[in-house]
Length: 402
Image 1 (cartoon, rainbow, N blue to C red):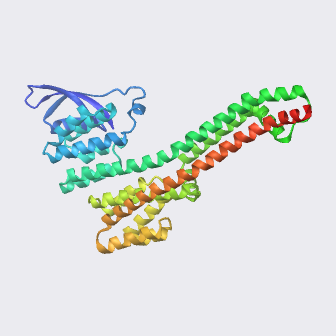
Image 2: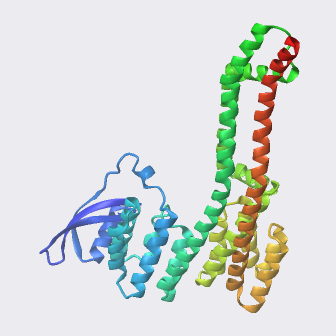
Image 3: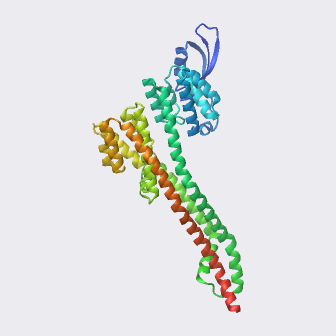
């Protein structure tokens, strides 16, 4: 898709008009203008600025929630779709997001459905968002669907913040600990080493270990270690971008002690919340499962959901292929089975999501409470060993003087 600038006149030829339209070709722009009873004079592709694509980025969850809530309120109050989009494009603080809303408004004015206009901007509006809007438009309950979407995004944002919040404290402590140890080893220990060398004699074993490590890190060894760490990080990042790499890393992360349990609980909460929201909004079950698989965030979960979709397309229930996947706990498959038999699978999915949201809270609290003492023991033990190793020769010297 590209942005085209146009000028033209109304069918009567009295009024000169101009504007911008997002379309795939010049012919599509002309067709859209003719639908609006405008005779095009010029249609040119708008030049793209350098780095504009990178600057566009994605809409923040907060911006999306505010837009969705306000848009739902306006639609519920009886405002026309185009007018509501016009107002929101002017008052949205995020300039890139405001520009996209403006382009959506132009598309809707040109005769596109709201959902089709959103699908042209996948970086801002996810497939889940566009499909739910399409279901809302088809059922005449767009305001209800938008409120449901806003609620879904808010809960997903809250879940993401919980996990990020749990990782911030340990990450900061570990980073500071490594920095302190590096400073001691590179700048403090060499001073002691020079003093011990001038005194002569054989140094205690712990002191020799620390001095050797200090010489290694202060010299070419430090650069080798740094280059190795950077190389490993770059390799993992690049490897994870491949299909095979992502599958292997995601499988390892799920089997990781403690962290793996947390990742699985987050994935289950996300899976059930997404599927429940889509099904309750009237999106067909096969489309709902495909969107849920794409937004799973974990390749193992994604493959399991695709297997479920395949089973459902063959006439099976949701619970049968879920149980065979052996990824989801028995409680999840049993609750979904009950939901299917009672005809309330969407409510059951949302109840499972609420339960696992609480489980994530508990898992995060347990992880934080366990990591804190471990980090303190590591930091205290490492710094303590270095200090004792540096003072052992001094204690030995004092004993000799006596």
